[in-house]
Image: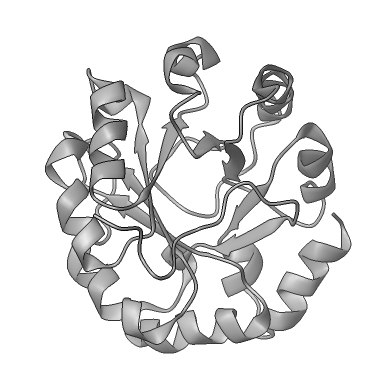
Length: 227
């Protein structure tokens, strides 16, 4: 399958701001997505939770399909679900451009990365805060993105876990010639985004830091000003 029209170009030198719709007003989700695109967002981050892998239940492929016509930005779908291999095709067909799965949720990570590519999407792998980087060493040559969780997944608005910084630094040191992007998700604010950028982060998922403000353009500008 050919890559989608909105396929993500990797690597990039520009820091990527990806508002998480988990913090958006779901009663007007299409308008919220359009608003952050106009405000200067680079990606739209979609947190998918199944109530099993994490203690929360959020959205499925139908919501991705519903918002796809309302933005030209890449849809960055983060699957916090058990048995993610069952959902790859559904999210790809719904309009996802990048699909990220958790190393903790699958036994055959390499195979799953291949399934994402076969579905026409960029492939990402994510780690919970307590999961070692050693668990993804064997797929680093095969992924487009590594997502480091800086809170325990399941809910928005949590406090940033400081030990994430050193974890990102170690991942950056091991990246060497590889081309994957480093993304961070959880507690990203204006007061820590600069340190995260210096540690090596390319993509910043921000929920309440953007959707918690009425002026979305100002919120994104405030984050960029600290990079």
